[in-house]
Length: 339
Ligand code: ADP
Ligand code: MN
Ligand code: MN
Ligand code: MN
Image (cartoon, rainbow, N blue to C red; front, side, top):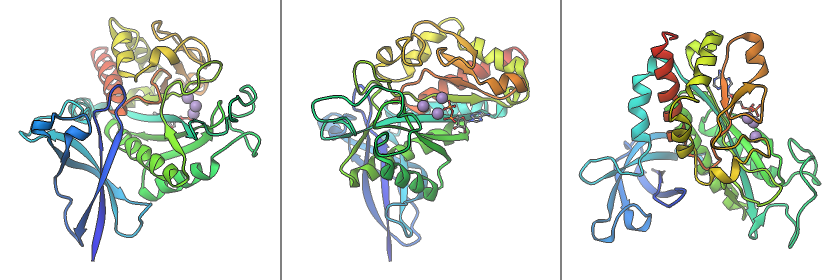
């Protein structure tokens, strides 16, 4: 007998990369081999030297095909063995390793929007649904659309062994959220990309597309973010480390560095309206959903826990977001002797 391995990788599409995948049939018990693809068809190479290399880095059961079939997330390399410019995972792993002693955890809230027939799922032809208000965590056919897809996706993530921690309907009709974590930086990012793959793949069976567009409907509609909850061992044990991490994120040059890595079109989403802070002004505060970084109220009560960076866009790359957070916060916690 044979089994099917779905090789999945991040492509070079600008401004926001997409996932690509193809299937390899392997003999029972076979190792997952290195593979390749035509980079000239994925914006990752020129036609005259188009081979790119797929190196498996994370695999899990394939909940769609079932049986012994697997999903295989890959890093992309050039044929000379050098890291491909689109391979952001390879930049995260050394930073994660450097600060592994601080035991960083992440919980990422992935918001997304379903589209059908060229408009957000649930938007009437040529018009708009009633204004925002009843849809967030809504129940009932008048308030939410696409729950069958959302449930199928959640079940698939659980079956695949991904660290999914919940789902909810979002503020705009057709918009939903799932959360991955808490898990370390590499693991949460691998699981997030795999969960995104499953979302696209499962919605495909319903004739619906899922998009991570940060501002899928212009006007008075919420954008889509990827709030990133973050803690280190020291932050889970004391408040000085919580405050130090919040201050670190406002440090010299840090606001610009983080915003640049938090996803395409962030200026359109972080306007200061719709539960966001302006992209170019950094702030943090307890319970404040209008701040860049929120300290949850329970964390202030307990004087320990985690912080929520509310800035990353839905279309952000978790390999980049977690690298920036670990680099910025863990280096300051180390310097201040708070580890
Ligand atoms: P919100 O109230 O902002 O909607 P959610 O419940 O959607 O928050 O998401 C919170 C996320 O934070 C979850 O993924 C959860 O696993 C994660 N989380 C909880 N505790 C920690 C922690 N100590 N460090 C990092 N992430 C955490
Ligand atoms: Mn949430
Ligand atoms: Mn949300
Ligand atoms: Mn949140």
